[in-house]
Image (tube, rainbow, N blue to C red):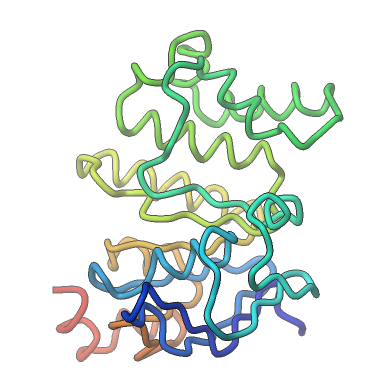
Length: 236
């Protein structure tokens, strides 16, 4: 089966510093794939390169049958490769509902957009209660829900989540991963970049472990969880 996303020999530099050193991986439709590793391993660099925010030095990225390495970010988004960025980056001065509408800015099917917004509110009742409220007044967990909802309004073929649990209290971390699980149950394809390795492996189908810009281990998430050397090195 042809993968939805195929990354081959990807190199990225920040000046003289090699951030990614020839990584290769695949994501198939309907899978949840996680990239895990310590700070500085190259996780966010990978996802930002896929999004078109960073241009690779070398390597191939194919998404849904198209070569996209070096493609502008707006064109990548138009193909259905949608990122929920680290730090959420909601628009604080706009209302919750206006932020959701921004996720559908490329769409013209107004009736379907309204249906999708209501579906987000059904998924996230707290956002519905705050639909007219300024997004900047939301809690961290609510802002993460809004960022995910905004991405869903773009109707992604592949949803990329960059550190969705960062900065959240443990109870909210659990809630965010339940949301990821519910999206997975709808057969959506997800690439999850996450420092919380245990949580990521619990929800993922397949895992790649990054260390200093290299993939040092990969395998089915269940097998990675049971590998004692991986547990000791990455899960504490």
